[in-house]
Every structure is written in structure tokens, then in C-alpha cells.
Image (tube, rainbow, N blue to C red; front, side, top):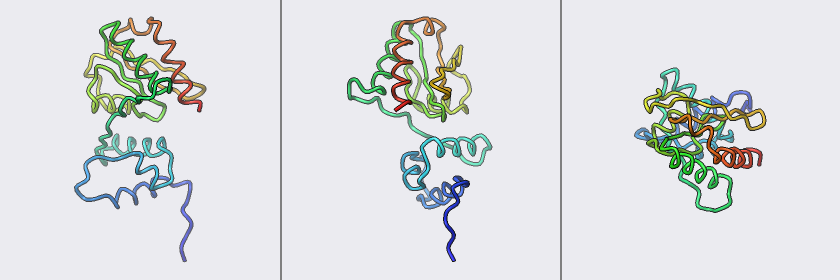
Length: 167
């Protein structure tokens, strides 16, 4: 007798998918795990990051490439973040509510994702982790310069973030 998958146990489906990966696999593809388990990217990310914090696994997730389509909210986020950092000679990492890196500038990819997930120490002299609430979903903007928060491009960044997360 087979039992239907229990929707309350996303970790069990995730573990099965992880076990199906090749033994020498060193990187986890959140998109692939999301598709193969039927879980959202956020559920997969939260479970993996929880395991990472417990020391059970080492999670290494690459930062997303900057989208090319002009006018798309994700492309606008990258453009506004680059403008913020270039104008203030700072660096920044923007994390979504699930701990995935949406965009970064001036920070290496692995370090940016680790910082977004909350398991990378503040080695980059990030002076603040500012919450940005989009509806009830808290995103975080890690910055090296307090001048970033007073820059006019921050308004455009928040608008693009809202458009991306609300859709």
C-alpha cells in the first residue's frame, strides 16, 4: 500500500531528492530541487539553510545572473543597486524573505549568497542590515555605506522589489 506524500513534511521530499543526486555533487540547484519535489523555491531554501546552520550539510548556492530584459523588475533591481553602490563607493547585498540573494554589487557571489542566507559572517564591513518590508515579507539590504540609505536610487530599488515580489 502506497501512501500519498504528506504536504506537511517538505523536508522528507527534499531529502529524497537530495539522495537522488550524484555522489560527487557539490552544488545544490534550488530550481531543480523545487521542480523535482513540488516545493516552492522558498521552502527549499529555508530547509537547506536550516540544515546548513545545524552543520548537517554545506550549502553552496550561486547568485543569480543579472537579468537582461530591460523594464523587468529584477533587471531594475540590479541596475538600481549598481547605481547605489557606484555613487557611494559602497557594496551591497539584497536578500529576499527566504534568504536567497536577489542582487549584489561589490561582493563575491558565494559571499553574497552566504550573507543573504544569514550564515556568512559580516567580513565585508557591512555596516547595516536594513529590513525592507514588501507587504509582510521582510527583505534585507546589507550595505557597507550608510550613505546608501539616503540615496535617491533606494526608492527605485524598493519599487522594483515590490513589483517583483507582489507578482
